[in-house]
Amino acid sequence: MQVRPLSIPGALEITPKQHGDSRGLFLEWYRADQLEELIGHRFGLAQVNLSVSARGVVRGIHFASVPPGQAKYVTCVSGRVLDVVVDVRIGSPTFGTWQGVVLDDLDRRAVYVPEGLGHGFCAMSDSATVTYLCSTPYAPEREHAVNAFDAELGIDWRTADVTSSDRDAQAPSLAQARRAGILPGYAECTAYIDGLCAAGLPQPR
Image (cartoon, rainbow, N blue to C red; front, side, top):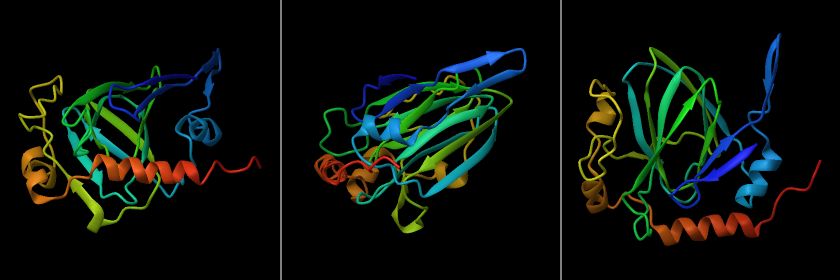
């Protein structure tokens, strides 16, 4: 696999090696040992989500309170999406910035989103199926969102015809979320991840 760090520290783009012939193809989409070697700690797989979206549907920007937060390993198994990582960690040197990665069923890239970062995507094909592995289960009381169309963030979703859920459309701006005290702190997120790293990697089975 090929690994490219994104501009937001901790986030990774991962491109698997595909093996194809006349029958089709095979790839290792997720390898716990390789991911854990990259991030320096165990990825505690707790939940797997799958969503199907029509063209122009935007989901996000979502994040969870830290600790424990929720790390995600995201790919698009059918269709094409613009996957976006947003730094919502107060005090981060890249606070308020974002980076987009195209995920599709051709290159079959994945994006790793560590605890404390915001995440969302926009469907760029008539139908797009996205699946993501989560380090912690869904907990409504810890889940938050910032508005995907916040002018301060200035995310280019690459299409003018977009739609989102009522919840996402009513999400606060980054500034409003900061004033409400729901954004995670960079120091707190760093300390939490450092603690995971200090616990060590799992022993080979």
